[in-house]
Length: 407
Image (cartoon, rainbow, N blue to C red; front, side):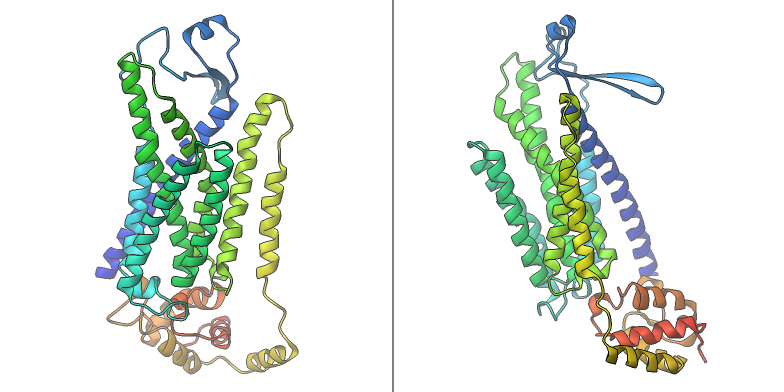
C-alpha cells in the first residue's frame, strides 16, 4: 500500500509540476516575444499618454493592442489591480522540489549514489545535492552583482555564468549517479530562475510601483536588474528542460564523459533559444532572422548523436552473439538473472513501482516492463547498481522475443 500511495504522490506532483511549468514557460516566452516585438508609437495620443512601445497582434479571430509604459501612465493613476507574474514560477519550483524530494531524497542510496562514481552515504549525498541548489544561486547572484553594472557587463556575466555551469556540471557528474547529476544540474538552474523572480524581479517591481504611487521617480536599477534576470531566465529555460528530460534516456548520462554531453545539450538549447529571441527583434527592425544560432545548436545535437552512437561490434563479439542467439533463452536462465539483478528491489515485501518479480507469475505479468526497462531502454537496474551485463540484457531480450516462457 505504501508503494501504491507513493506512486500516486509521484503522479500528482509530476502532473502539477508539468502544468505549472507550462504556465511559467509560456508566460516567460510570451513576455520576451512581446518585449522584443514592440515598436515606438506613431500616434500622438499614445505618445502623450507615455506609451514607450506598442504591438498589434491578431489571434483567435480578434485583434489585440499591447502597450508598454516604462513608468506610470500620464493619463491616469496607476491601477490598484495589477497582474503579477510570479505564482507560476513559485508553484513550478515548489512542485519540482517536492517531486525531487519524493523520488530522489527519500531514496538517496538508490537514486543519488552510484558507488562506482563516488562512494559515500545517502545522507551525505542528500546534503550535497541541497548544497548544490543553494551554492549555485549564491555564486551566480554574486557574479551578476559584481559584474552586471560594469562596461560590457552582460557579456562578462554571460561568460562567467557559462563557465560556472560547466564547472558545476563536471562536479555533479563526479559526485552523483549520472541520472541524478543531470537532473540536479537542471534543478540547480531552475532554482536560480525562481530565485531571480523571488529575490530580485518581483521585489524590484514592488519598489517601483510603490515609488510611482508616492509620486517619486523610480530608481532605474530595479528595472535594469529585473530585465537582466528575466533575460537570463529565458536562456536557462531550454537547458533546464533538456536536463529534466534526460533522465529517461540512459545512453545520455551513462558514459564516462557524461558531463560534456550535458553541457553540449544545454548549450544547444541556449543557442536555439537565442535564435528565437533574436528573431523577434530582427522582425521588427526589418533585418533577416539570425537562424545561424539555431543551426549551430542543431549541429551540436547532431554531433552529439554521432559521438554517442553505438560502435559496430567486433568480429569476436558478433561470433559470440550469434552463438548466444543459437541457444534458447530459457526461463531458468532469465530466472537466475532476475534473482541476482532485480529481485532485491522487486519482491513480495518490496515492490518498487508495484513490480514484483520474485516468482514466475510476477515475472510473466511484468515481462513487458522487464524487457523494455532492462533490454531496450537499459534504464534498469537503476544506475546499474547490480552490474547487469550486456549479455544478460540480450538473454532477457531473446527470452521475451520467444514469448516470455516461465516453464
